[in-house]
Image (cartoon, rainbow, N blue to C red; front, side, top):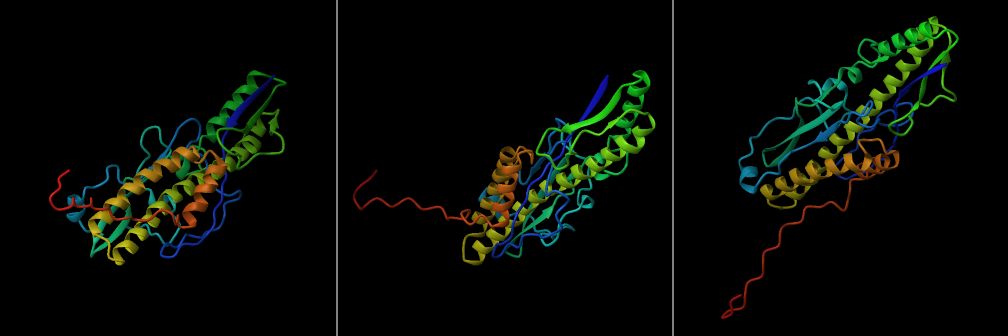
Length: 282
C-alpha cells in the first residue's frame, strides 16, 4: 500500500540591459525563478492601474513621493504588507503619480502575499505540518505501507528529486517528509517572489520609458495615460502567457524581454486627422 502527496515548483531566467531602465540584479535562487502564481490550483495576479486614466485625469493626478519599494533593488516579502486576495497567493499592485513633471511609480500597500509563502520555513503555515500529520496517520493505519511526496506538478520543476522519497516508519514523517516538504516550500516562495518581481520590473520599465518620452518633449498627460494603459495590458498578458509563471519557457521569455528593455514598446503621439482642402467638405 502506498500514499502519494503532490507538490509544485518552477523555474525561469533573465538577462540585463536597458538605457534609462536598469534591470535589478540579484543572486539566482537555486534553480532560477518563479513558481506559477499558485501553490496548487490557486492563482495569483499582478496588476497596475486597473483603468487607464483619461488625459484630464492625468493632468490632475495627485503628486506623491515614492513608497519604500524601489526600482533599484529587488523586492522582498516585506514589501507586500497585506494579505493576498481570495484565490491568490500573491498580488503585486502599484500606483502611478505625476510629480514635478515626472511619472513616479510606487508599490501599493495593497500588495500582499499568503502566509505560507511569506513564512516558508514555518510548518504551521507552509502546509508541511499537515503533510507530516497525514504521513503519520497513513502509516499508522497501513502497517507495511509507505508514504511519499510525489513528483512536482502544476508548473516547471524547480525541485525534483531523482526518485520520490519514500518512508516506511512514522519517525521518518518528521525527519524525511517534513524536511523535504520544507525545502519545496522555500523554493516555491522564492519562485513566487521572482515572478512578482517581474510585474514590478515591468512597471518600472514603462515608468522610465514614459519619463524619457516626456524629457524628449512629448505631452505629459498623454504619456501618463499611455504608461498606465500599457502596464495594465502587458501585466495581464505576462500572467496569461506565462500561466502565472507556470510555463517556464514563456516566463523566461518575458524576463528576457523586460530585462532587455522591450525596445519595440514606444510612446507614439496620436496623429491629427488631415484637414480637408478649402472648398471641400467630407
